[in-house]
Length: 359
Image 1 (cartoon, one colour):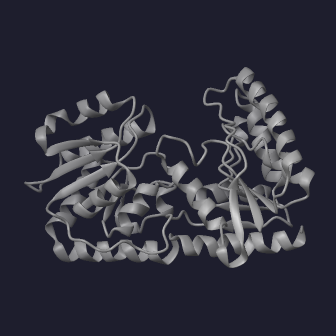
Image 2 (cartoon, rainbow, N blue to C red):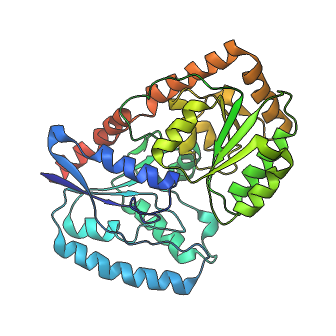
Image 3 (cartoon, helix red, strand yellow):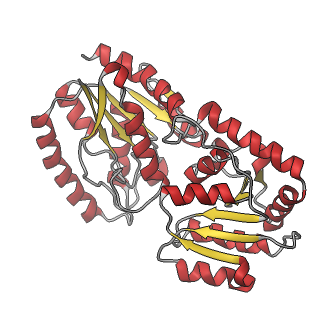
């Protein structure tokens, strides 16, 4: 059996907090497992290489711990390739380059980024290690055009830089349903920063809606929940907070809704957009980098004013033909390039030849 070592330095696929990052890590592991060639992805390590504050002492401690972990993994061996998901300046891959070189196996990065502006700052050492992992990689898969623009200037002649569309952990689309009414739905973690900014934009947009009977259900939880609840308090019982939902509950929420709305401030890409579209749910978001990689142009409005979000929601609720067109478009987009089969084919089109070159 071929064993593929998998590693996610920012967040293990076993992390208890749901997130798009965790979902993608789980999806990559599934895509790397192929019964037709007796290949399986193994989680090589639960080590977390994350420093969210730019603390040199924390970084030094993580580097020392990773070296000890790498020594153990090298002694263990037994892998045919090493694949790392999401290495960047706050969570560089501190294991893959060392272990893969020692074992003489291919080293592949997925969603790796480089950040020259972090050199010389509080994350300098980690940023350099993230760059070093990119230099060591036999191939790099990028998920968004923004990531490609950051990687392409450094691309080596013998290093494939390959587009991998963000994808769901499913082979096909769920069954279609019809919305139960003018029910809006959104899902997002409740924390300070970009997530709270999206909630602020959404709350401002609701004040511009003309549809008379709209309701909004919000899935998610976190430390900023009190601030989020306060933002929507003026709308009374039109807004319902569902808390954190599991995957089955989320799927039902998508099926019940008429429109999924989430502004998407600084989203890497947003797995919730793919989940909503797979269910045939039209999406309304702001036109932002990352978001553009998973939504059709009709789903995005300029980020100049929340009123534009409201206008697009009204158009979907008031015009059944437009709603149906957008629902069909959403499912077609996911079916074409955001399901597990397409991701598996793309990954193995690169990984397979590398494994033959480094048996």
